[in-house]
Figure 1: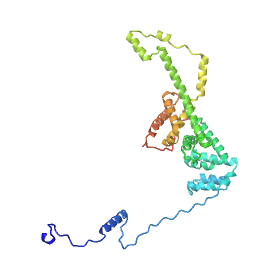
Figure 2: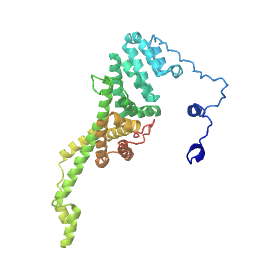
Figure 3: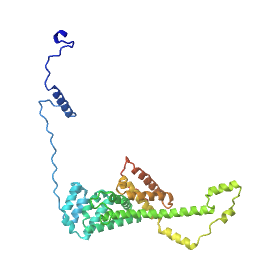
Figure 4: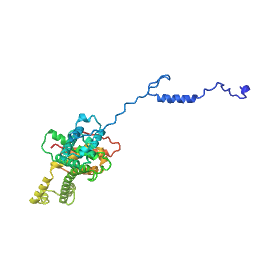
Length: 366
């Protein structure tokens, strides 16, 4: 080797390299990557063109000429299945002239159908999605708010009805929850009368349930505090168990005569009558129904209620805690539902909380 090239290294190969070999290998690698998961075709085979599906035809809005056609478009499931929600909205917008000329009786008929869809057909989400279109008309807003107040009153003070009536009333908290958690368009998302009268009414109804539970629980809490103060004063400002332990250590004898001397005097009969009237005014049935409404509201909307109305949920959290601890007028089943709601609220604040949507709601038996 040293004689041929003057060095100890072997001579290099004189075979010429193939030009563009690295480029071809890179191109083959790219092709194999693109062909992964697809059927391999030889180079001579013609490439198959990806055929696109047929384009969707543009929807031509249909003008609804009467309130019966509007109701049929919304309530008739067979006809409604032919159109999507956006197409139904386009039909309603195209029928603005018909809606402008509707009388109060026709608006009342439409409102009754919408409320029935929310409470009996469990279609509150669909109805709430259409409300911004109807809320352009003042007659509809007034009538819809009246029906909301009437339904809320029937729920907390139910009359004797059949099984269908009970099922209808069970959906009332879920209906108001759909209003509170709906994605309202810009300018209608605030719970004020000027911004959104319907949302404002739903918010005030839920606030009314909350106030009933708060007032009932605060009354029970004050009674518990008075009883504690009476017992504490009876034992000289010392807890009863501590007083008994001290008496036993001192060798004193606690007999019935000393207890009678420290007993409270009999209350005035007139004062007792006033207390009985106050208790009668705050009906336990009303209290239990309002507690059930709050529990069913949280059960139906769950974490979305906390994300949409955090201040309202904070007030409900505090109120439910006091009601569970101090209120003895709440039935056992209702208090169990409140306890479940209280534990559920603690799960909502977790970042990876699992949310479970329930179609059915739980209410107290009337």
